[in-house]
Amino acid sequence: MIKKYNILIKFLDWFNVIIFFILISNIVLQVILRYFFGKPLPWGEELSRFLLVWIVFLGAIILDWEEKNLSVELGINNTLKKNKCFQLILFSFQTLFLIIVFYNGLMLINRFHRFASPGMKIPMSFLFLPVTIFAGFSTISFIIKLLNVFMFKK
Image (cartoon, rainbow, N blue to C red; front, side, top):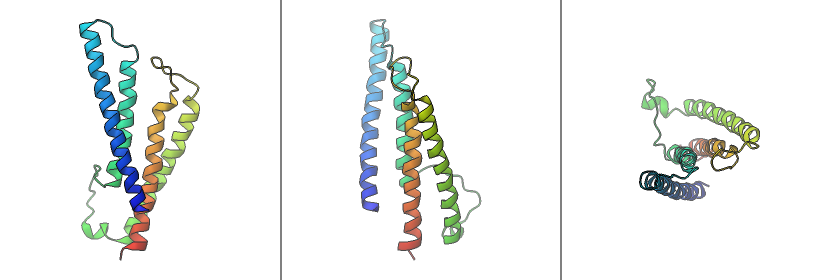
């Protein structure tokens, strides 16, 4: 299961690179059109905002799986981190939080799907979709890590 999830993470990593390339290309195109021709694309800035949201949340999925995300150490030493009971409590709270974010993300998608963005005329739910995807994938990630801690490691 971990190997399949690693393949998915690699795919998300490459997808994020492609989105980033599109974002940079869009910004360069906007600058050229604005300063050399005086007429930028009406949807260029909006596309950049949407793509940036997608990059942030897809990147968060990758960083979360690789455990490279920012964290705050609250006086928790390494012995406590290796305590299985503490890990169970920590993973449970994190998973509960992500399930709540996932559910509310679905509600936002449902609520804003009927509204179109001003420039690109796509549903505004597209802006909330990466948050929901992040919460779903991170929940799966925490469940895999939890199973790994309690079933496969001593």
